[in-house]
Length: 386
Ligand SMILES: [Zn+2]
Image 1: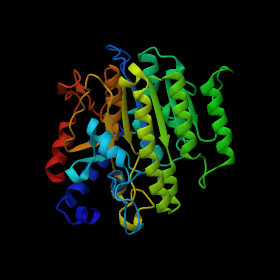
Image 2: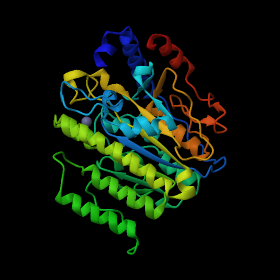
Image 3: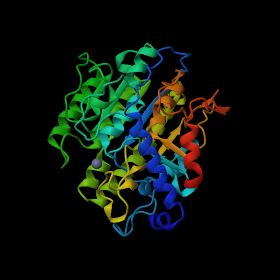
Image 4: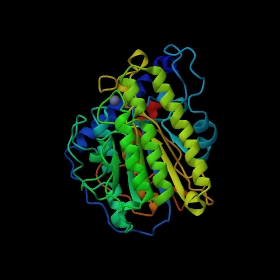
């Protein structure tokens, strides 16, 4: 697949697309974002579960293992995702269909990507040590715009750094990240007690990389929380894939993806038992960056432009009234995530220069929202990319 991509005439289109995206991001550094509208249109009543798989290359997101690295790898790494879930939503960034999704930062690493995703606009950050988010995130806006209690907007993350990306004001939402103790709950809150137990267990079983815990603890904590609190927005940030990638452990990287696939199945099965809550819940899955091409698979940086390609799934798999997402066309970026989630909740999408566009069809299944498109960028890229 990778060889096909390289030798195809899309090579020029790919380079142009990433260049255009990067230049656009660079220009955006000088722009001053307009304040987010705090006016809630009508609360749609929907819920969103956003899941990020840190550092998953598009090859493996497409389910294709690198048999040169692991000759006995399973043929399809994400069987549930591709067979059952993908048909119930939209997939963006499927290069096999001539569709591309890119990051929206110049560094091709995690923190700049997460800051941009949650702010909805490019942020001035070049490494993983950047300070806390400087602008209110969409999680904070959801609390305010929909008058939600703090427990209704929750983050469970394997990497501690995520806590700096999801909120500009510490404690605005519920955040449990890395091996940091869980926020104080009322003493008899079962989810709080379970979360704290998981944090304690994870400290005795740390991964080989720093400032993180294994995803199995994060996932279990998130599922407990989902049972107990039924949050309107649940963000689950998984990190094992990137961790094993940097350890140059392809077998463990593959195993992490297989876990993610099984966990997605478990999540949808759980939602199916949750009645109206489950039917009203939409799922978005993406990654913060890809990885290098071929034998550079273990790393990612702006020296490896291939790691700027990402993928995303968006769907509301159990919805009784179908929720339509715009079909992929040309290029999608991380900056489209915030407006899409805001639109799912019935909020007017945050707008600014270089903000993304909502991918949610207006009126649930009628017409894609074209009001906030970036026609010049899209027109410039589409002919070359195809
Ligand atoms: Zn990494």
